[in-house]
Image (cartoon, rainbow, N blue to C red):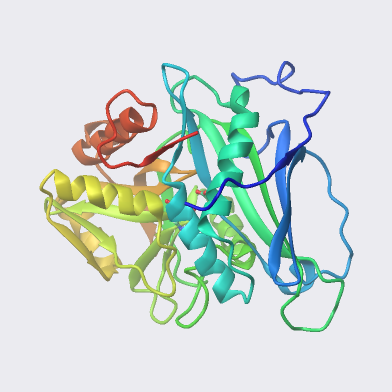
Length: 354
Ligand code: PLP
Ligand code: COI
């Protein structure tokens, strides 16, 4: 652990907490009172500040806007019954943050700075963490290039920021998903494994088309043949097939999810056989037909554990077993909630106490 980060804190005089309707918290629309900001210049991170949440002024020439030197993370803070506050596995996000930075030619951020900045911000805005079930404070750290220069080369200056907001679950019902066989989210040698802003921009057109056709989400497939499953929208995809936990192995094209890793840890402990490998569309659909597919879900920070109810492929709709009957995903969600909300002890050290 490095020494404690020297953060200047300026608190708002106009809290929006009282006016916020905590009974209606769709994902990503409500922001807490403060944000964290730091600058990178001359080869180092400096000016660590917590300031009132608000607009920022930027040059219109920054390469974040023009060339996509911009990426983010997503994690959550939880309020326990005794009022204590924890953040879930932030060092995992810190490590992935630097993987994204490396791929986009952006500077490394020491993991302790990442975690301490989040802990300090969450502490300042801890009254914003919802207490009701299935709710949390979503934390969005991000970094972007700030040089006012239009040349296509890595910026020399950057900002690291963190914003937060109270939220409920991202999805409210079992998903009707479409297997994408035309567009690709990422390719071999690309940067699908990074949380680059551009990965999400590029996913919007295919996702919108799927929504227009009546689906909630896409399952991305490999870009070469569209025969193997990769991810479920902005979440990893997992199945119980023939009693085994089956999930695509991570590679260049897939974001290595922290929820995915967490689920794998629990499944291993519960004695499930685990197969991390290429997962073909054909075998999953066959499992849906012959009843060997007994669970299917997305796993992600925003998505949490999101059951897949129906899968479409080439004009045919497959209805999966009733989500309420699913043993594995229901047990995972319950166990995860109990750990994250401090209902049961956390033997894994996943909760970082603020
Ligand atoms: N895949 C993509 C493309 C994502 O955006 C996310 C969300 O962060 C995930 C997977 C799940 O990752 P995690 O569980 O770390 O949130
Ligand atoms: C997250 O789960 O944190 C994500 O990044 C998903 C988000 C793009 C909605």
